[in-house]
Image (cartoon, rainbow, N blue to C red; front, side, top):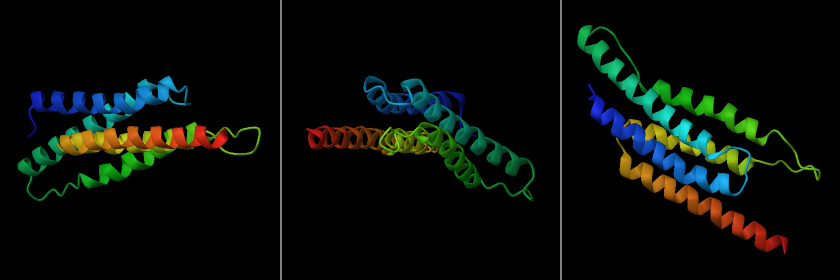
Length: 147
């Protein structure tokens, strides 16, 4: 079982990583605000930890029970895909879709939450920084090419 103190650490760490990405999007006035990124990261981490605890306690009580926590990862990926699609739904006047970067970022933040839930905190921090860098590099390139 994952202790409550470890649960709190992982969930808060996930929220902090989500905030790194979310603040970038918030400052730039993108379709999803910082709160959405924090909530997705926290929710993904919490769901992963609760599922792991459930799997461990269920198998300890009944060895015949087979619980596969990896199925939750599939659900998280699909569920966040719907949230990302909502950010993308509005086209520009020129027919190009808006919000694709935000949709991809919110989906990526879900993976940060999963990593934190599984206790891969260094990996999650790396993903948060990398996502932040990618978003800024491409925004810079876009601004530069539009001049």
